[in-house]
Length: 401
Image (cartoon, rainbow, N blue to C red):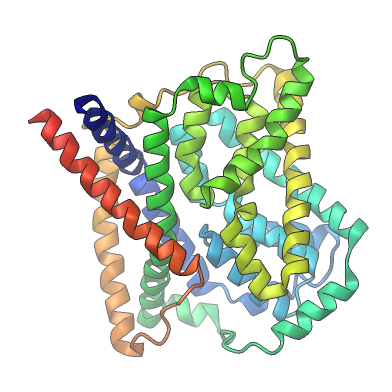
């Protein structure tokens, strides 16, 4: 019993350590995201996203990488862009970039996994967008997309276009930044809680033999190319089983890296947030099940292909990571740059919450985003994970004192 309590307490400490290490990165990322959402009108974007050519896809990728990293917000933004006239290929490019090429995700990858994975994330993200764009062009379901546009045109509640120069120099414009910042946290905190808790418990309680068996790490009788393929193929299904988005998945990717999962498998895992069941379900609400499953299928093929290309390219240049960052080192609580960055960005958070409250005084709660997520099941899961962490903290204190 004492051993279980010790493992449970250590798991919770590891989960909280993941958040401690990355807290300032989330704040920085959502602050930048809030400014972009407040000062860049979506209507202006769609002028450059109306085609499926190289320019349109490139600009869609750029717009996506400068937006919110919350997966649910990315899906809602993509829906808005499609409704305003963006080409479906461009919208999918935007959707992927806004969940996989954003600044806060890049910082997390650098902290938890290292520069090779960050370089792979950026290069591979561009490759994946190129592959998915080609696949959509080749298999473009005109009838389904037409039905999707007709469905979206019935929806209301789109934001009016505005003069960004006037907004960025006004107090109300900055109050809106605070509102966007708080809304991003409201949408993302549940995924972060669930993802980081799962990662903490998996890191401590799941034996390395499980990951070795699942990803064929010790399979000496199987050709290496086949093991690489297996890693790339199975990784999206492992990511889907977590039910969380890209921000919550990075700590678990660290666990996989520590346990010897191949580079292709880890990259496939990181890229797969748009395939998790809650997000597929949200896309189904927006576009219908046919289009939602079509997007998931395109993503799966593109992810596997991209993971294999990255593995081959990094292997050729000899820059595949040779050693994993140790989870216990990453999650340590100590007085270092993380401590001071967290202190500084906690003060930034206080200022942004003040801006949010000023915005609320001006507009009430009318502009607070009620983003669709995982519904009642997810609410129950969030409550359960809060209790799991509360019990874990109690166990850890009991062990230490």
